[in-house]
Image (cartoon, rainbow, N blue to C red; front, side, top):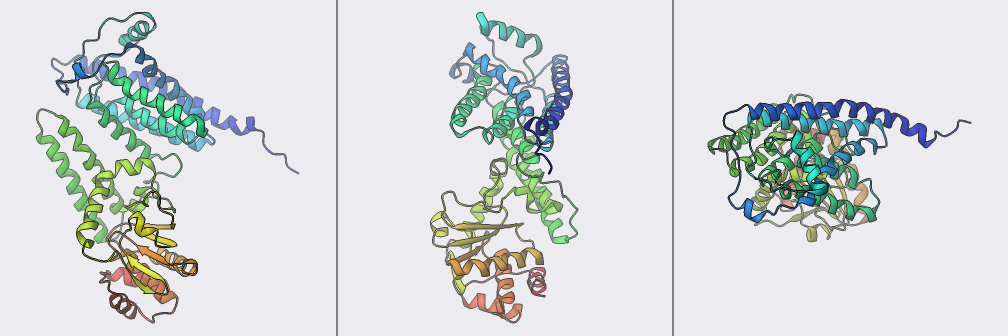
Length: 443
């Protein structure tokens, strides 16, 4: 009989991979960061983005240099707190992505901190002196400190015991606040740093594959056309940001919807619904929830505009309902919710059993997903009422309902299934490819 591997032998590949990454990342960090600082110092004029109230409203707290510096420890430590070499690679790629994007921003759009820090003594004074020997008043937005903090916080919060998490959250809050209370950064550096950190965490998620890992250019003209529309939307927000001259806080905030729409465009061009990082239980990864929040806000407004005068759902047959994406109280009326919307996430606190088959809006489902969802409907209906939903309840969820009606032999053909749905009081809009997928799923 073979012997089980010891914890030491299991951790050896992780330790080796972490050491190799750290040997590369540490000098890369200091060389590129210092180089960007030096380039900014050679300019005759470096602008700044600062509110006039900052020097009065934000106190200088010398002791917060301690949590400020502590991120260096956690930066290295997190590489070693992993279970597989793959986990080490994902975290290191997050670090590297943040570093590269931040340095490009520092070189292309250098900014200068305008604070005049008071003299300090003791341990804080020593730590400020060491920091001042390396760090200059440049490299402001996005805050590299905050971007790394987002990734480090997310990496450890899922690996710490429950009782230690509150302490970890408090300490990370102190690290985040310290970039202001040490007078290292201005306020607008914080949201831009968070945006960068969320992007890196989205690109290399902690507990899933990269949303771009299986990217294949879509052969569907409609999908490519929709992707182009979202590219134009992202470009419009970037254009509005460019009109804000000189660079202002509003310009930086416009980057958020621009990034969100660009990511959605990538989904339509070939990444698919994986861009939403939505799990089978209807919940999305934290980075996806925040990074794509502007798009989700628009999606929720669209749901309200289209369905505000319609019933939330209608009964199709045998306890199976078709409807729009439910609110929590609406979801709790059902034993099972089968969710076809990739862009919307399960309402918090709902008690319904949730089964998610994420799909992009306005794109026809393939026959495999339509059949899989139809099979779940047939099994779930014996346990109580079932809601099949997408954003509006007009296309994706209707396609699944048609597939279920055909596979369960309640209807003989797609036309009969569509008539049944319309008699139930739901007018649906199924593209030809969706009807074809539902029909092929039966064969």
